[in-house]
Amino acid sequence: MKQKLSLLLLLFLAFITTGYSVKADNYLRVGMEAAYAPFNWTQEDDSNGAVPIEGTNQYANGYDVQIAKKIATSMGKDLLVVKTSWTGLIPALTSGKIDMIAAGMSPTEERKLEIAFSNSYYTSVPVLVVAKDGDFAKAKSLEDFEGAKITAQQGVWHVHLLPQLVGAKSQTPMGDFSQMRQALASGIIDAYISERPEALTAESANSKFLMVTPDPGFEVAESDAAIAVGLRKDDIDSLVNVNEVLDTISETDRVALMDKMIDIQPADNSVEGAESSFFQQVLTILTKNWKQFLRGTGITLLISMIGTITGLIIGLLIGVYRTAPTAANKGLAILQKVFGWLLSVYIEIFRGTPMIVQSMVIYYGTAQAFGISLDRILAAIFIVSINTGAYMSEIVRGGIFAVDKGQFEAATALGFTHSQTMRKIVLPQVIRNILPATGNEFVINIKDTSVLNVISVVELYFSGNTVATQTYQYFQTFTIIAVIYFVLTFTVTRILRYVEKRFDTDTYTTGANQMQTEVLN
Image (cartoon, rainbow, N blue to C red; front, side):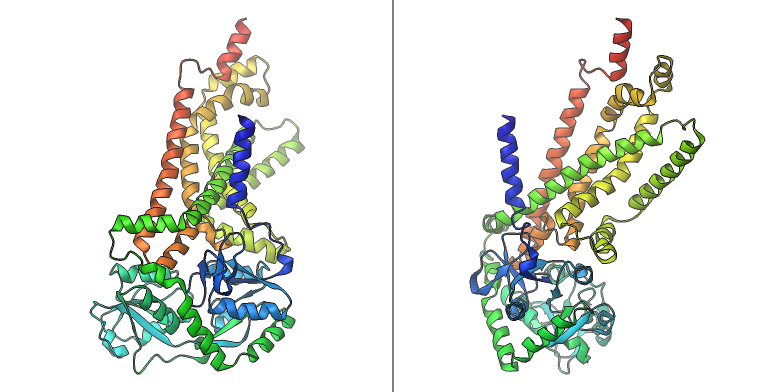
């Protein structure tokens, strides 16, 4: 039975991690969101010249992908897309996780301080996307948006255009276009700033959206309107190669390629069943994209489970060490104190900083500073483990102090060492008492894995967000994601409560009771 379960586990892990064994040496690794049609998007097959996305069984296509494909061919390599959130693209490039960025990125002066840019391969025209039945559907100029709640994507040059909308109510910039589309569809905002290709996509995919091209339009710097390939500053040879390829693509060819991408983008899938009921739409999305949801759920469960177990072990070890008596030898006592201080620093740092920041520093920082390239799944498990370990160490320490002091004194009187006291008397009681807190950490880890998309981990939230950008049915898609998260956390909670009840039965005996029984016999 155990062998069968082990085989099933291995097969499951093989399914959810398919693609992570790709040898990047044979590929040109290009970073993009793969969720910004028609520049780049995610699809389930390699039709229309799509290329593989690293770490998944999915493919990427779009204008950026086709341009990058031409560059890869000129280098004698195959293109491999590394799906990364927008905020993680530049750190991924500078740390060597990817070879270049082709994600509709403009060569702004701020970005030029960090990375180098090729010549432009597309010029953007900024527009606004509004609700077709909204108060600003008939707007013709920038002045017509007075009083409108308008936003733009965080970290993009569109944010700098907001002040040109005099009288408008500028909203906090949002993380990506999927968030802005959802906000517009729900009426939270009246409009968002976009580019003509994306706006055409939104308009064709959702009949309730409308593109507005103001006349006169926005005043845009040339460096902002241009879109270029991002490279590391020391990668001069690749920069020359990229520029040579881009010089061979005429303006006519670029326009034709963009028109083709607009035509073949998977936006038509988003409106299928638009007239059906909400639950029918949810069922359609789940039926068509269950593999994405399953794979994302598997990655989330794998990382959170291993991270919680490893974090518990770390917490137990630290908890035992920090409650150990001071060594009799003066030299050892000093070392013990120094190591205890280092453990305190570790605990305070990882309890005092968000996991998303820890992810960026550990995954990208170690590669950039020390040249250490971590596998993203192993990095994710490591990040969750040490983060959990910091919290569990305090939980364990509290659990140890909750054990009656008389038991320590009795163990000492019987000649038990500190290690024996902990192993046979204290820890069995501690583990029993901290089970609820351990369950809470497990539940928190299941939800917190959503921040790992910044290091290109395609977990449940990242997978679901990709589906939402493909279908344009955000509420329906995120309802599925919410249900999956709830099922995971509810199941974990119930399992741990069952384990707690098993420990609370009359047949349960602690190590202390066992010791006393042995002494009496």
